[in-house]
Length: 338
Image (cartoon, rainbow, N blue to C red; front, top):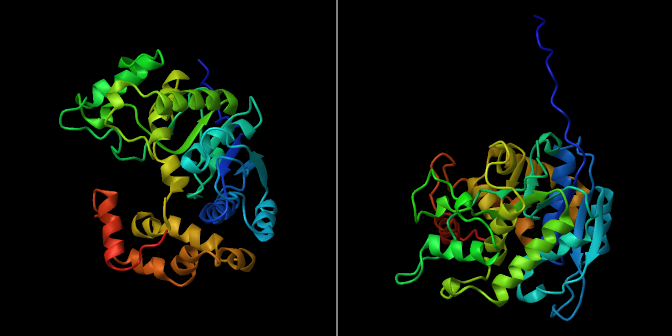
């Protein structure tokens, strides 16, 4: 019997990337994201969209990107700045940008959304996304719900939401974890997510988020939805669209290929040597440095060496279990910036 011929992995088809940027910190993070994408993933052949909220009644000030130099650099790195209107969130809940921006993308084309405070540190084109089975970041803590002494538990709280939208709650559970432990329940960080159509994903995301915000089930009476609304709705959307946890191989996104650093002091405190190296290398060219150094956290953390002082405070092999403990150590030493 002839030996079976070996098959080569199928290259990942082109897909779009979406980040959201507005005036201030996010526009500088967007520059770093774009520079790290081009440096770390030269084989990426899709389009990079930078969605920009437009002024309107839901914003108290102009949210658009400031400065022609930032726009020019983004364009130089292949980014396409696309406007979108804030019809439901705006200033009161800027995390809603990631929901409303989805409708500015080309309909029917697969996409990956990333928060701007993300570095691309490896070959994104080699990540085997299954765009028909959406997922999101599992790099999270049990931040929601916050269980109250006499209030509903995890099961009652989450089941109320699944019932609200006619979703099967039982199939969302991870039986590897015990009842009333937060990891048993489908919960993501919204730092990245993906699907085969941004409009279909966006419409469901919007519908669920507005329903939860405007008419929360009684089980949520003691729960805060600010800033958690997007992360409450997201697992419901993913479950409804046939996705779930672990639909990607572990260790790629939030691993070898991307780094959701959140804040620069946290990046220097806990991320890998490679992530720090990527950050400092992509920030080094003079044309980029000229723009980024106008933002104080980048100026002091990256260019003035404060980040390396933060790094010296921690052992990456023995980090505090809770992020808040890392933040507190940085603040005690006078190095916190955001």
